[in-house]
Image (cartoon, rainbow, N blue to C red; front, side, top):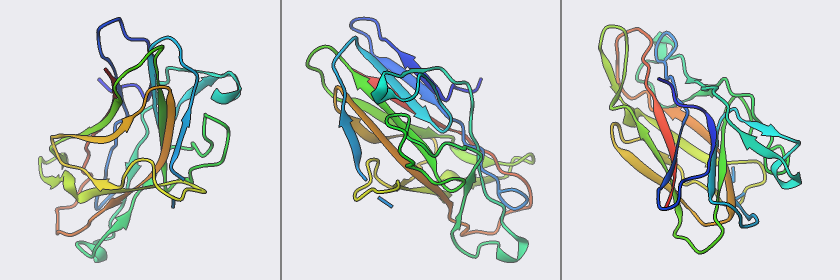
Length: 220
């Protein structure tokens, strides 16, 4: 089943809170800048929140008393490779997410359709080790005929309007393995905008190649 794009989870005492978010559908062939934004929030009941792409906020924005809530939307990221450009080098991917404004303060942070918003918080009443943001991609992108493209053909560039340093480091997916993206300090909100790219470094059969990435925020 698809994982929700957002969730607010108050973990039980002594247990880790986990959040899974977003499936990326990546197509090839026939459909196949920089603010390090980390800000302190008030301590409170232990909870975590993660938004990837679309999200929901009760109230105007988080820093004005808004409360995040669940949103089941799963956003897609796609690219179509023209036959004449097969294996011709990197191509930017686009998203169906329409999120441009930060749910923290309403600032126009991301640019669509080129970037996907990702952000959230880790809140706790006392001292704690960092929460961990991670991503796990499928082992490969697969078409209807079972042919594959390695998931390390997809990378991302992290940034956001007004950024000087990216919050989440840029990187490349490792197919089938979990990757740690960021340590989230207690009582902070973090966010970034991710631009995905397809390496387009090989000749592959025609078809739509699909895969999924699961983002998880885990609290100690």
